[in-house]
Image (cartoon, rainbow, N blue to C red; front, top):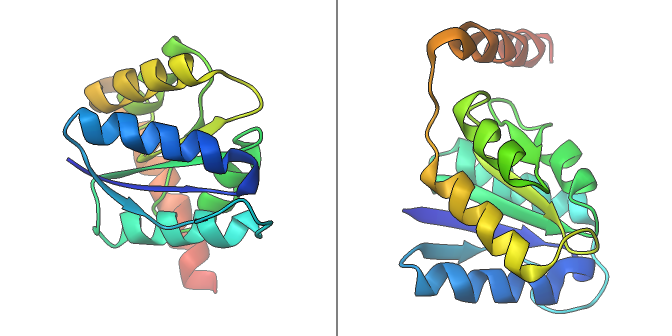
Length: 151
């Protein structure tokens, strides 16, 4: 599976360790930045990752910042993207199974590295279950299309 990752400066070291872990687990990684600890505008990184996932350049993406919240908000501006902040195992699983989230967002100032690895594993191993969730995800897509047409 090919993954696109990105972070701001607050999560740069965290991202580098997560990348190393994912590569050791056999994932192909594309890094969209940041490439050092200098301050960046995290929305730019989030949109790069989200657009690349939306364009099919990778199967899924992982974004990291201080809390994961800003990255999630920014990534969700890209039509067709569902990015979820997850800091517990249940949410990581449900983000995929119930919401078909293509991007996992985590906060380097909120969780530790070992939990982040565990969340990535759970999220990557989970697939969308469809069923009762399908009409809800379809409605999200409906609104994506509606607002895209208005702009």
